[in-house]
Image (cartoon, rainbow, N blue to C red; front, side):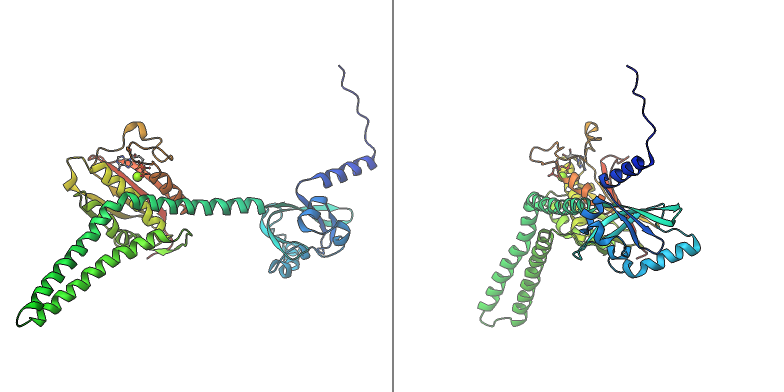
Length: 379
Ligand SMILES: Nc1ncnc2c1ncn2[C@@H]1O[C@H](COP(=O)(O)OP(=O)(O)OP(=O)(O)O)[C@@H](O)[C@H]1O
Ligand SMILES: [Mg+2]
């Protein structure tokens, strides 16, 4: 079939078509003159800002912006007209818009320039980012919830070691109180020795309390709060719980902490969680092996001025080759009672810190798991 011949459109038709296009666009389109006075306002812009076109046309465009842009806008345009130096024209950026009811919302704004018969004009394309931002916030909230749930499951796994760790000070308390009582029952009670017993009881009770405090902190919050941290402090603050776990299996924990580490910015509890996941896996890998005495090494290193690393080296059998590609995916496990979520959650946490979780073969046997994080400034 021959294509139908199309007649040359009349100018009025072209204008009508452009007008239809202008109003059918999903994005807001606003045209303003060089004094910042709104000349055109499409349907999408009406929906976004809550103004009808006839309410807003002829009024200043800075009405659509919250402070500080509202007051600064005229200056931005003036500077551009004088210097030609474009900050937003031709590039686009994320800013905030203000609706007729005063509420504000995130938008992606790109601005083009029209040099026409009626002088210079600017055309702004506006995309509402509210839904995208809300989805990102929701994803962030769920990530933190997931990490929190992961901590409970991790603590469940470490419960045996922790119970053992708590049992030690409790048994010591029983022994010291029995000894104290015997001393008190003597004909001439040895006051100094009794006081010594009481002090030891206090020490042991504080030790038990310290472990419980750590545990409570670890399980408490599910909202991430970033702060400046030193990776060595992170390791040292985790050691108590990690050692309890490893000691119960007869595996020593060794540390090799670099001096002069730059700080990082992170959520202490979540990063402790990652480190515990890695050491827990190392304990699992070595539990039934012949190299328990060699222990697990936790190492910190400065990779460069801008990057630091924590790694956990074990002397287990290493990662099974068939798992190498999938090891960080959720529900990948070789353990009878494993969930396979430890590494997946750890990777989510490290990515949220702009870092990278890695797994390597240890040349002398065993596995090396660790993470790199961007440094903030010198510690
Ligand atoms: N240090 C290691 N040495 C050898 N294999 C390891 C090591 N760490 C992890 N793996 C392997 O990776 C798998 C996934 O680890 P991941 O921590 O994600 O789950 P899991 O430990 O099996 O279960 P959980 O959800 O309790 O952590 C493990 O089942 C194990 O096969
Ligand atoms: Mg695990």
